[in-house]
Amino acid sequence: MFKKILIANRGEIALRVIRSCKEMGIKTVAVYSEADKDSLHVWFADEAVCIGPPPAKESYLNMKRILAAAEITGADAIHPGYGFLSENAQFAELCERSGFKFIGPSPEHIRAMGDKMSAKKLAKKAGVPLVPGSDDVVKSIDEAKKIAKEIGYPILLKASAGGGGRGMRIVRSEQELPKAFEQAYKEAEAAFGKGDLYIEKFIEEPRHIEIQIVGDRYGTVLHLSERECSVQRRHQKLIEESPSPFMTPELRERMGEAAVRLAELIKYESLGTVEFLVDKDRNFYFIEMNTRIQVEHPVTEEVIFYDLVKEQIKIAAGVAISGKYYYPQRHAIEVRVNAEDPFNNFMPSPGTITALHLPGGHGVRIETHIYSGYKIPPHYDSMIAKVIASARTRKEAIAIMERALEEFYIEGIKTTIPLHKKILKDERFRKGNYNIKFLENFDLTPDEE
Ligand code: ADP
Image 1 (cartoon, rainbow, N blue to C red):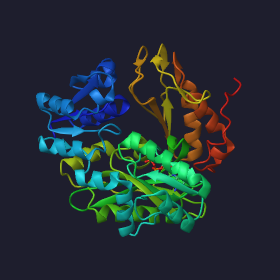
Image 2: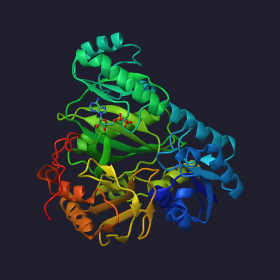
Image 3: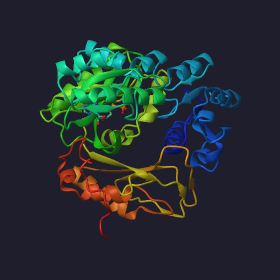
């Protein structure tokens, strides 16, 4: 087993990884930018190294500085968390070449799945159903028109290098296509350095349901059931739950098997998430595979009693998967608390947290790096906490979440908590009757207190 792990990340996920390491008796090294010197991950790690100024490019994305920090502290492995360098094949390669185990899949797997077109080709080969669309990158507007005509409008233009919902455009008619194509191309080029686009049929009102998988180097691949992630804003997840209220044992088996087939085909080793869209008739379509730990992993952990980060570390160290797979016996819901004003177009709200009380009690789990007096830097992601509620039933989990959010007291900044409270009260949400359009026609005004 590793003796010392450097965590190449910040915020709640850095802390999350530090916690698992401590329980495993592994020493930890935090890295931090100048903006994060007062962050909890710096306090709770055994050692901490400042790797540069606030902009991520000069710190959390700076491979050389991170590797130098690993070198001087004598770490033997690097955990990338999510975001930043977690799906950067070059970084994974550099880690291995410099003698540090990258806690994640091989660079080849990151590359194969990071390019969405390549991922779709592999999924097809594994017999996993795909959203109808182009077989490859679309080179010109004329070619796009031809393919769109074949599969029928509306279509979605997507960036092959995509992520975070960027470089995506819905096109409802041929007239709209040329302009949308140029816009999506430019957006993708600016965001990912590569404008390549492909086409998918735009599925109306699907659910986003993903399967957690885990594979080891001995060829064992398991799926650990699903997460429902349809409460989204601009393709970004806000609330996740497991099991999905839409799931049936039969659909879970089919989706789980499909995800496992893909991982088996490529001999995948590590944690991964296979994302699907599911239509109202319970047809499911592969959209992408993520090769890292996901933000929403706690909902899976709470329903199957499994520490995914520990498992990820063990797999990287060459330990065979020991876990058995249980169908969810419980229900878990996660809300993302972002430092944003949900009732003012989600305007970022960085600043100092002047007072804070975090919820607790039976069935409540908090993942956060904030504390009273903490100053939220404006340079990074706006997520400041995750609240996870779990219980035997969905109804109980919702009641626990509502109670927990009542107890969540935070002053000095705006957060998404008031919106979460409103969603939890919504009849459609309570019935589990929602899809990715749910927030589009949601009343984004504050409730009267
Ligand atoms: P990204 O990697 O940028 O997050 P994804 O392919 O994972 O992109 O898609 C993100 C979200 O966009 C999905 O959760 C879903 O809400 C929406 N989406 C993606 N593909 C389609 C599609 N073909 N039809 C309808 N919605 C889609």
